[in-house]
Amino acid sequence: MPKQKLIRITTVPLSLEKLLEGQLAFMSEHFQVIAVSSDKERLERYGKKEGVAVFHLELTRKITPFKDLRAVYKLYRFLKKEKPLIVHTHTPKAGTVGMLAAWLAKVPLRLHTVAGLPLMEASGFKRFVLNTVEKWTYAWATHVYPNSHGLYDFILSERFTRPYKLKVLGNGSSNGIDLSYFDPNLFPKQSNLLCKEQLGIPETNTVFLFVGRVVKDKGITELIDAFIRLHKEHNSCTLLLVGPLEAELDPLPMQTSRYIENHPNIVSVGYQQDVRPYFAISDLLVFPSYREGFPNVVLQANAMRLPAIVTNINGCNEIITHGYNGIIIPVKDTDSVYHAMKKLKNDKVLYDQLTLHARNEIVEKYDRNEIRNALLTEYRALQAKL
Image (cartoon, rainbow, N blue to C red; front, side, top):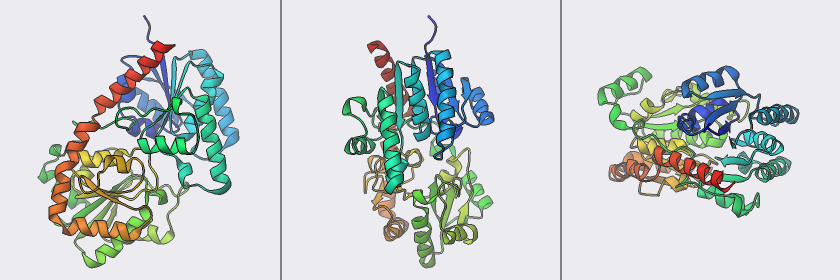
């Protein structure tokens, strides 16, 4: 019996590579998988690596109604031709375009995963527009999967859809963690010292790590200001930033950008395909984001045995238990970031206690194999009900 078709859609291939790493290859053992995204060359490289078919669709992360309608039509024609059993979308723009096209094409199972909502930081007319689009996306979907319990509650509180459409798989997360890959034992002390030397980080410095898009919504302004303050008191510390700048979508204040470029103890390495060496040389993660779905970087940090300072937002406050495997602080509060960083730099007893628990929590709740099998079980259950 031939495999049924499963189409997975993201706005940009980076989401396929990072947020869903290895998942489509896993699903290709059970379905005929097609990955749909923008950036044709990068998408084709991804397809070859994962061993899945691809279909290029021009999508943007900005509000571009006319381009989006063209994308809907192109995708609709593709879906009518392919006749998939499931269309499963991720990221906001892919969700809207993908769910509308799948609804028009009468795809039986139209699934959308919610892994963060930019509208949480919007206001006024923009918030109204984004709320409306979100409601449309959920209306066209047959099932909606928030990847955290906090997002589930938020979606219900905003009345975006009815409870019967919503479900959190497992303990949350879109893809879980590959614990054999994010393993601190793979990075011996000597290689870590060499990495520090290459980055110009003194061996004895406390290294505070941030991994993610270096943008305002991730709390970078508060993080930089807190670090500058801490460094004036303790010069034996380094802030290591790993991730791309996105000046067009979410620019940083000019002063913040200048600090990143010029401060001798702030090291910014940009986007990195493999983030593990940077976890391995760091002492703790600082992730003061304004909004998240279920942040992979916090899972990765704990898996690499790093405690995490996170803000009290959904996803972060589900992974981190305050005082157990990290510290939870208020959102948009520079003083709280500073005091948490200072506390973990100076309090070795607390730091060691958080480190002790960090990886165990991930092993128990977020193993990648468990997450993938939970999703496969969901696919099969939905298929059986048709």
